[in-house]
Image 1: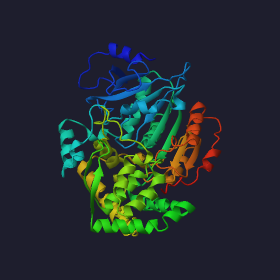
Image 2: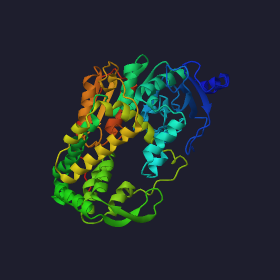
Image 3: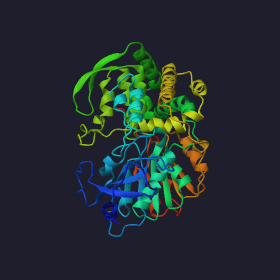
Image 4: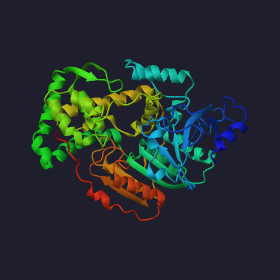
Length: 487
């Protein structure tokens, strides 16, 4: 199996610009990224999956989806690999292959990483440097460039990506496989389970974004709820509450003040470690705390950092973002840091599968009016995203993309109580329609929780070992509030 991709590549005829059929195929490739701890060609194999951009269209061009197989380290690997589905939409997976080394559930099972269509090393890329560079009309410029290049933006969607996953497993000659999705990857996993269930042995969906979620209509209340959870968590802990008894009030007073009068300070660049002049507004503070809530490791530090910011020590926020508060140095520069999340893929999925099913006025009306700085921040975010979809202009998906997925495939469902973007209620909603599922909620967790503790990692490993066996999840009850840092 290890050399199948190379064999197929040698046998493939030269391909034209149009798909002759829809039989999946792969071609071998040198790995695109520098491998620091493993040797290319030994434990890792890189290649492209070749598929039509638009299935069912005989004139569709072919596109190339980058994938990596990380082979199991054990002597007797299981025949069914794990296929990891990154979040986003628009996140990439292949460049980060080395972060998967030494995870226990990969000792006896191959791992397949794929850069979903439009992302990472896949071709074409729907990355938008025009947006990343801060151009005022970046989204228009990106859309025009991609469509001028012949990209069919409406073909970059969950249903086509789900077919890509099934095609990849078939092309690599795996009879059965396991899905492991995080964030948007859970929505993609559910779509594969709906459209191509035949060869799926099991599925793991962590921090669930189900198709029935009314994401932007719920955005305001979900953001308000997670900030309330953060402050209530500190208040319920004797040590944290003693250190910061008025944390919630001080935070919202500080955000209001910073919106009226932004603060100038010296900010440390997380990539280079160099200092530069920076400005902090109240909206900046809200947005940066929101992002930090994704990371379970950062959550215990948030009351301390928020307190420091209310005292005028704004650089402490950078120190947490740079993980200096963990005692870490700046992250090592790597050759693949130019591989960014794909804004174009994000737009194509969200503007096709979410926005057409939502009501803009209702989304604004659902935002809680207090605290006022968060009310204004959430309404601004909603307005910006809906206007972005007006520009991206892709046709709406079929109604099925807004309906729950029902399946009896063994599924492990996970959620974090402090997750700022995929709340626990979404995981519960998905689990209700999965008749053979187990749901765990990590009380101290953010976004992506199954690898955040020894307890959950053990549950994940047990599940992949035998998805049909009853899971011992008792240890989850012992995970209480975060271990708050107050010094």
